[in-house]
Length: 410
Picture 1 (tube, rainbow, N blue to C red):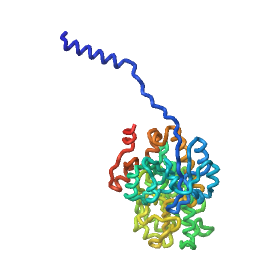
Picture 2: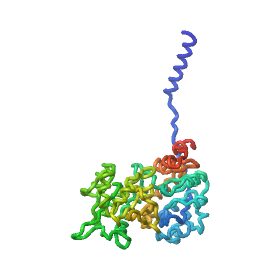
Picture 3: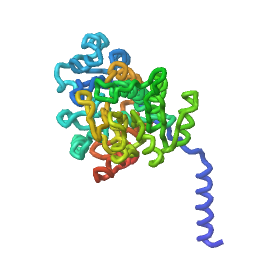
Picture 4: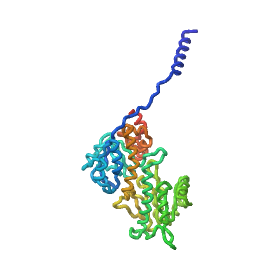
């Protein structure tokens, strides 16, 4: 055997022996618990009445050793006093400057451009995104500030659902029907129609676009009041699901423009309840369709926080909640749940508190981002990078995958 062949055999034998030898196993290093510093500012925009964390959640966080600072008056519009927060262990700040020194800022509404000036690099923001109100200047300021911004409505559970959207949708669905009843009354300039009708008088006709959670709870409220309901959704499974959940046969249809237009002609109220898992909600009702609706009819676009599903929709506020176009009353308030701020505040607080406790136990929120893909799904800016694909296309900005950014920082 030549030296070359012998050398080849020896090397082959060597590598075979190495491959059979026990290999060292790399285990994840457990991170020590981290103490969070959380700030709750006073909401100043969009006539927002909710508060991000309620006193009993604050008490739970402080009991675990975390620090919470709440701006004076932050909970008043949800009927929570500064004294209740103080008794829960929170620090009460007289000005927003002290609150924005916190590492984590939690807001019930998106921060204004002026509030963004108070942020510092690597600070973490939890708030709704509300796409119709976001501008390229807003995104650019978040990027320059190197803020880690997390959109509450895109936080995802292990089963693929969106918990904040789910709980707000339950509130929005019921509130939408209560609002519809008001708008159809003569006092609000409506048709003077009672939503449920009475003996000998037919009920109001309600068209609901979307068979998700908003649609489900709007349907429950409408049927409870005695209204005639029509439900549209392009997902046949959702239509089957809503019938099963309601427990009765319902008038349902896929979104066929011709049939939808026909139903809108005789509708007293239309509820827009279509949700998009990322980006803008699809627009399914054209301006021409709206122009053919009955005089005094009402449109309630619950989807307005994702752009709206009516071509005629424009963002309104709780101070000026409606406008009239083609003699149809439009209600397009993005934070509709703020009509019942105490209920809504407790609901969101119940979702965020376990996440914050988990973040504290895993070494901080950035460590939790590595472990939890559901929270990563909500991140739209990360230390100067835009990580939401829809916003990237919408503003023609460079998109960076959050997974790559987190991996590169290990």
